[in-house]
Length: 294
Image (spheres, rainbow, N blue to C red):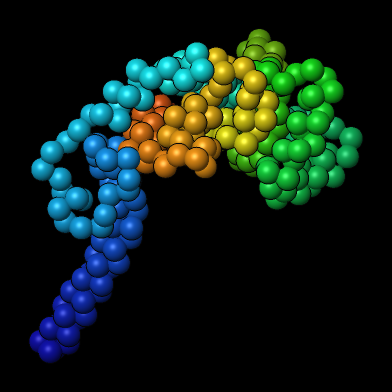
């Protein structure tokens, strides 16, 4: 009996050791690229830092790349201006994507729409098409409509996010008992009022997911923004300006990787803030749903 217990303890220790080792390896491969970009941004040299202890753990930290990035003026445009443009563009896309996704998901879940199953299947199939495959048709379409500007970009970004999010929203709303809305409408709310006060609150995880997808997709996009906004420098997004400031689009000059890394760090701050806020939203939503009994 004692031998069996010892063998059980040894096997348990081995399993825990293997599990922690795998987790440590995964954590290293996840964190190291971020650390590498972070340390490159504090380098005084425009070249990439080498994979050695002396460079990965530097004795001196330089803010040269950040100062140059935030103070430089390129063709009349500045990086803070382009960050503002990206935030406006991404925020507008996220808000419209959330509204369209929830309204479409609610209609597919609750309303008696003709050919509803066919429409839901079509939406599901469309989510598998890569977004880059639509870049050229979208550019040609909006060029004909004279919408190669922010409005056109928002209209181009929104369907790619809202179509996928609408399918997720339908699945989420299907899991919400319809009796909640019926009770609210008996108490005097309209269907739209029940949608705003009941469905949107209970579907906060979908709201958070759609907001993250819509915001990050528009915020980090380069190809479509480049084709829409290139002639107007002051309307550039941060990705376009960063590529030009770092010299990545100029084959005649050596790329300044420290400036590019500094721009990546600055651009990552709004995404991190949005992720933290969305995590709190999803935690509160799941907690409230766990305490509701039908």
